[in-house]
Length: 120
Image (tube, rainbow, N blue to C red; front, side, top):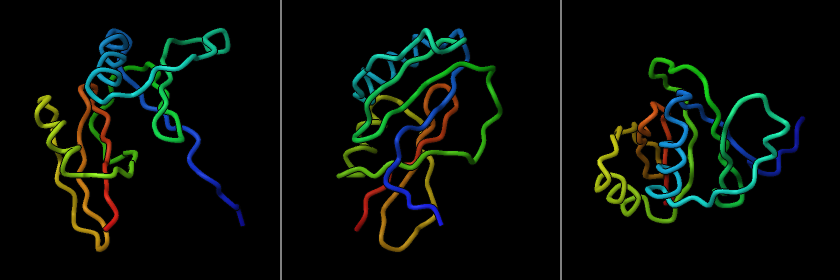
């Protein structure tokens, strides 16, 4: 058996020509802190951000069709998160009800699906 401790990071991708737009979206709209990335270790461009006690890593690759793949993030107030995203014109996707949690997903401007949930 594997004894997991926590999520360290998750990685999403954006088209190469939209990387700077992604940096702006995740810092300005979502409010994440940009952190140092050891660029000399990677052959492609990207950015890293703090997100709670984990990190979001953004890399580049050609755009892919929309998928059900996603990352789920627990938030303190799911309604406030939804209102903030809607005020910024972000696409909201309703999720099926799961007992004990309120949740929805959003599609970032680059086609990545992100679920936000609040435990009840």
